[in-house]
Length: 493
Length: 79
Image 1: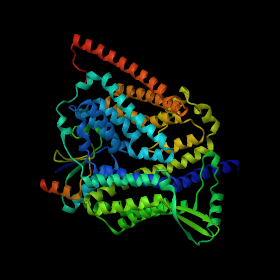
Image 2 (image 1 turned 30 degrees about the vertical axis):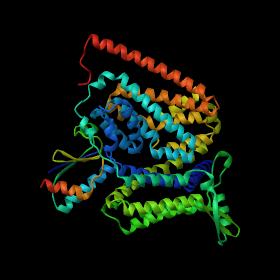
Image 3 (image 1 turned 60 degrees about the horizontal axis):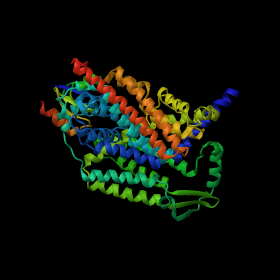
Image 4 (image 1 turned 180 degrees about the horizontal axis):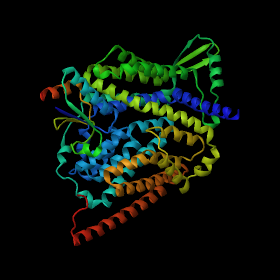
């Protein structure tokens, strides 16, 4: 009897979390983000980025280009690893390839947008900035440590990187408007969240419906839980409709537009509109608030429709829709399952455990975050709702960032794949560096959150980096002396 | 005719495979179509990113999903 009661409570926790999540957070940030990822894959030719990664490109071009390539070209590990192998094997050098490998899962556009929308813009910026500097740092370190074997690479494959392709201007504008759509939906500034007009629909009974919802999905706002609103129920219904119609409407897009394609696009627009207005229920009916968000969404939708019809070729639009749908199909089910289990876990885990282990910004707390990230493998993006749960259970933001940095980079599965490509020694050294840097990132960010002086943090960081640089310089000098004394055949091949 | 589809098994590679089979069926042609999923073998084809489509030993396209009309043209070229 007691067991059944516990199970029911777990199930309720999972479903409640899922419903609150789908109703509240997903739409205005995740839906545009999926379409942005689709547009990037379909409309940016890979050659326009990879041509900067060749062996002849100077370091100050190739490392940032590798990071950029990571954030625009790939969202899931199934793209990251082959592209990493391609860059590495074809002579780009270990350094930029590692930068790419590090940066792509941590700071791709979907992950950043999602972190910003769910947890907060500050953590998203910290994730971006620290991944960027550490990704480049780790890449350079790896290139230095394995300098000799790196030179042994093919040197005649530079032609692969020399292909030029430029992006069409209209495709670029299209992408920017998608980003504008995303920003107008997610930015929390007065201009966008204020309501400018209000319409009252005389629908009675909604208040009772809201009470009913609060009863079946009980929530405790002190624990960071959220309930489900009437608007949320409408949105969940719309989402199911979109999924159902898109299965044929967008899944078969490569054979041309059909009636269902238009239906599913229309439903997506409708969903975004419903998500962007404010809805308040009261005894006489419900109020619809026309917010700044809504005007932003309408405006960008009109622009997108215009460019899609007039400026892009039909093939481009088809590719764009196909890729977006692919992302949704691939990632969304994982998110749904992940969020459900997060809700279940939240019932089990006691806040005291988290607070005892990582409630403060300590070395131990940050290490715990990293270790948890390495040994728990979560599918792409599911790390974000999990991080949100930890945060609401009392985790400090520093260890939280350490966890967010380590989880997408390091999982046993990805370590195995990487070691198949670059060899075991290199893979494990990479892992150690990532763990070290993630812990450090958490500590720095945590200290910053705790109100430490930004200059003293910068000073510590600089001291650490110069120590690192000096060590590497010494190592490379020693190995250069040794190899000059006895010229040896490089180890690979 | 030998057709090789290169990719570690993601949905984009399946899409290339599906489109290739559709084109072959439409043209009523028989071909030796194989998928190559081993990343080391893929790299022997000298390409930068997957999915890749190789027809009779030549890399026709890589890093994107070719349109059905393109695949049709490449196959017709070889027959």
